[in-house]
Length: 139
Image (cartoon, rainbow, N blue to C red; front, side, top):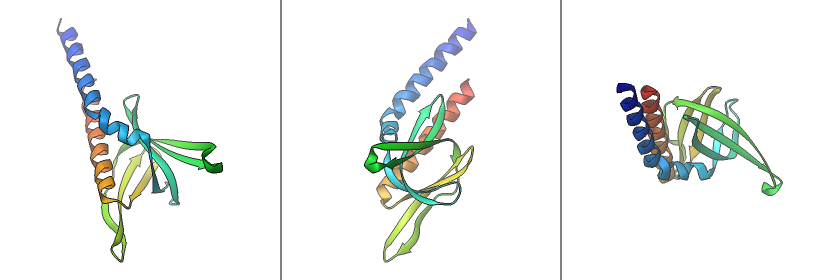
């Protein structure tokens, strides 16, 4: 009997967590064109998507070729975030904010010119990490 109640409460928590992040998750799943610093240290413009996949937070960097007719992508599993920095490379009032995502293959840094966009992505990634950690504790 106790196991059944625990299973039911776990299911309710997962449903609540899924509905809580659905709006924020959709913002990231749509993808945004950002500059990113790859694991190899190369700066590149990519369409960046972050979403939950099999209870793991996944980063997808999409490269479009031939004006978007062909696209290739690389996926990374996000394990956490490293130090975030604002106003990187300030020059005449223009600066970047960055989020360093720790993945299973290394660190990928996302660069944002727009502070509002940076704050939105940073907050959503933090919430996704918290929800992932909560569901991993329950399982």
